[in-house]
Image (cartoon, rainbow, N blue to C red; front, side):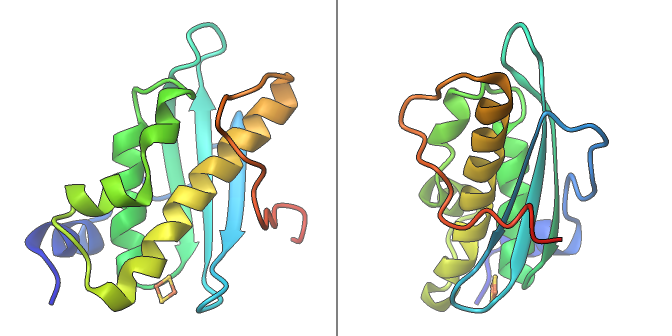
Length: 141
Ligand code: FES
């Protein structure tokens, strides 16, 4: 049912954790299952390159695997390039997900977007094409 890559990222997830004093944090919930994802970004102020990215989730295995892959894919990209890391691109990089699990991959994309939004708000910049998060629940702690 799951590809080898999904199993690899699920059993050995990359970049789990928090970043203290992160430059951007995004927390989103999955409307379908109620699971939660938080992404932390550490962005270089001058180059706008994402130097570090970590995630924490109360989510299923597919959410863990997609977030693990997504954090790897945004690392080293600029905040503008990171927008191209869509859930579709992440799923392709994982050799696909079962159809019932596609909604789980949205958590990673939405949390990255929410973290980019948080960064843009804090630094008073605009990231072209970035929409405000539907449900950033950063404040609901
Ligand atoms: Fe909730 Fe997968 S079932 S994120």
